[in-house]
Amino acid sequence: MENDIRQLVLKLVTSQERVKAQDILNGFAKGREPSRQYLNTVIQSMAREGLIVKGGSTRGAFYVSPQNRGLAIGLSRVKVRVTNEGLKEHEIMDTIKNKALFFPTLKQNVQDILNFGFSEMLNNAIEHSESKSIEANIYKTKEYVCFEVSDTGIGVFRSILMKKHLKSELEAIQDLLKGKTTTMPQAHSGEGIFFTSKMADLFVLESFEYALRIDNEIEDLFVEPLKPVKRGTRVLFKIKLNSKRHTTEVFRRYVSNPDTLAFDKTDVSIKLYTMGTIHVSRSQARRVLNGLDKFKSIVLDFDKVPTVGQGFADEIFRVFQNKHPDIVISSVNTNEAVQFMIERVKNTN
Image (cartoon, rainbow, N blue to C red; front, side):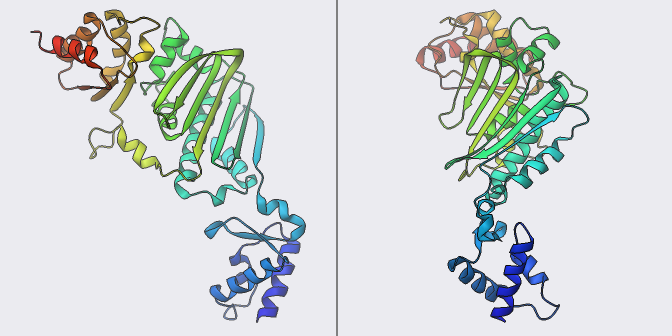
């Protein structure tokens, strides 16, 4: 039996690019197959002897001939460039996954996150960018698996700015980070970028003059000037190979009622609205609040905000709250000065 297995394995790895254990079992007549345990013992012996090379692990394990050793290691980067006409994001994702032989070896939760994030970002490029072509790639390093989606279209921040009649790309970034921001409300919920950015260890969105960088490993975000200017939009997504994050965990974080599973909770970084000033004004508070009436729970993050003006606190915690008594507004990372101002306006009749 061992000799039969060896001969079949050598025949299969010579005629095929890669062979799985099930392929070997299928090569035997029904009822004469070896047990999977015995088959694995013979295969492992052949690998130690250098007759075959193993790639992948556990359910994703496969075997190749020594001449195809590179396939066992897997391509470190797979890139595609496609014309933006009649594209379907899942078909492009399948093409990339088939070429990136390391993909089946990733943890299932990491695969799920990549499937979600890549599909959402590619769909944005297909339907919103107005770009003639789109470039996408996925690659693995020692610690991370990453993907990039790039186009030369209208630009994500400028698209939101123009279609929502905002004053600047910075205001577009502010709206984008709230979630439910879309330039095509009839076709999209506007949740794609929001949730993708929460699933990554590092999420970078570059477009024309600005780069939005969300670093979930240090729980901070940055808006930085981009030089040279990037025409169109580029997305960079990184997640650790050993990440324990799950898509369901991220979704549930932004659900106030587990029975409905509706996306009705959001968090807002107030430092993005200070715009270089110390005292945050009433008009800036209105910018913060714009569109937040769609949510049932709002978390305001005051990290790195030294103080706020009374008008700012009053507009949110008294005026807006009185107009929307059913919305729960909470604040986090407040220092003593900010907390004092919030409590002061809350106690004003």
